[in-house]
Image 1 (cartoon, one colour):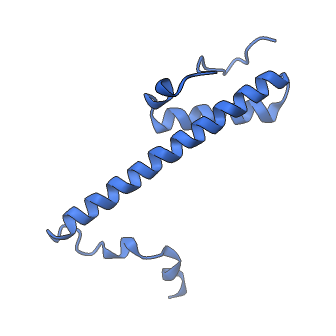
Image 2 (cartoon, rainbow, N blue to C red):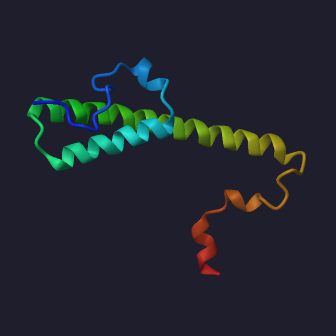
Image 3 (cartoon, rainbow, N blue to C red):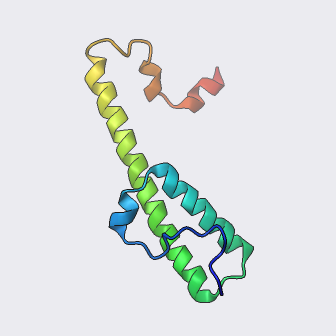
Amino acid sequence: MAKPKNSLPKENTQNEETESDSFEDSFHRLSEMAEQLEAGGLTLAEATSRFEEGIKLVQFCNQLLNNAELKITELKESYRSTDVLTGFDDLDDDPDDDLDE
């Protein structure tokens, strides 16, 4: 069976290649793979390969998000002492708390 038209040449990639991709590229690839899996027509081997790659992409995207969150937290803490973030103290609050008001 031929590769689907939208398939990028990233199937069966190694982690070092994935790590050079941006979050947006990885998320886009993940969306494409989900569409391919939902559309069907793949062999069991192809579907399994895409699922495996998808799991790796999800882990990679989660790692990038966690790193971004950590960096934002560190930046907030480093600038909090300089009063740059005065008025932004509510960023640490639970957004659901504002709904009760």
